[in-house]
Length: 197
Image 1: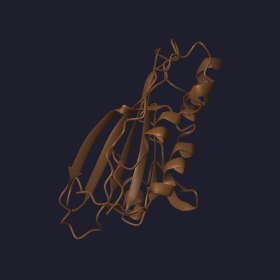
Image 2: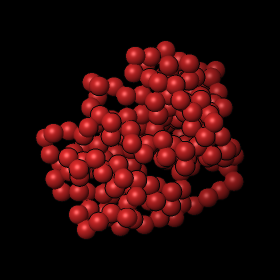
Image 3: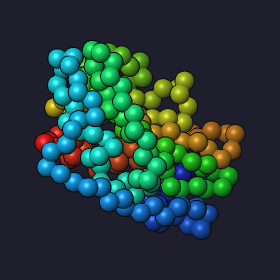
Image 4: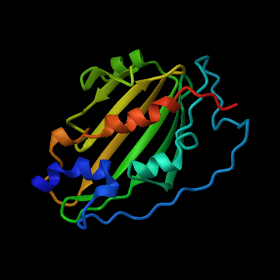
């Protein structure tokens, strides 16, 4: 139980993990930069265009420091007609035998409002802030070992959603589901409304 309680500390501070953890060694991936880029999805819904791309706008160094492998990047787009989400998934780099098998992060940028997100998830959402921005902490007891934070942006919202996959059958204590996720969201928040050409 003590090892499970320290799970979030290990994930948040990968470099401080003891010999029990076996992190892989991700390296920063060099991405060509340009002053203008073509958006992955052009949204004709009448909503604001999404100016933050979770696959392109989070620096590899930030992901590595937070315990994620930028080489594991998984791109997904969800053009739904009346709104759009750009998504990117990342695998965690820490494995603790008997405690943590793996964990994953999905970052979704969408042109829906925080109010719409609250209306959809009112039963599982708690209002909060991230670096002074309005946000929602979303914890669903039916989606065990997972936690999400939705942060308001100029174009809509960005959702940070993390899932732990324990290396045992006991699950992760509910109080640990969200541990450290606000720190990750806070580290990425300054990038959310930068324009990219």
